[in-house]
Length: 258
Image (tube, rainbow, N blue to C red; front, side, top):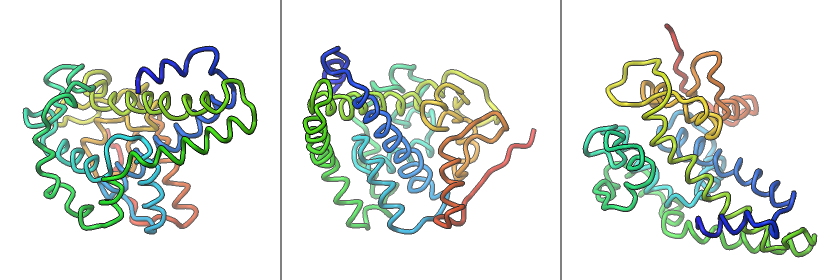
């Protein structure tokens, strides 16, 4: 995937349409991860109608970071053992380990998914998504290819596909992994949590608010991660929009008090 992302950057595949497709699907995918998989499903920080939850989870599954059951189960396990030896991306083992090296080794927590994601295992929709999440890229790719060819963009349908799938996926991969690595190494702390979590502003920008990680570890159930006036949390703004539209209720919200 990284090789294909590099190919996408060749001049022959550049187009403004490709950039727009990348940007739109980046927004869809990152919001699906941050709001859908993370705050809504993993932590149950808010309640939405079933169709909204399924839509957000589908958006997050487009990130190809395994299926929703594995993603949620591993994340809940991480909070249970954050930065301890049993944490699969323990930041105490170094920046590279917590960023991505941990995925190249055996992950014992995968054997405990029934314990940490039992609620999702009982749902046929999540079980189907967990098994077939890779297939979602096929209709997406076919649609992008047809659009690129039909509109005769520079680079054609292949250029549009390369920008919107492999390049997007690689950027989203590293943005997500930065929450595991950079926000356990760089930044400041509002709360004295028993782990290495920190608030990192540039990760927060890239990840739609997930970079306010120390706040999140202090109040995991809070739907709002940016708790101070300058801690802009784009995912929280989307939650506020859902609330105005009457599409969410029981929104949990922590507040910062110095």
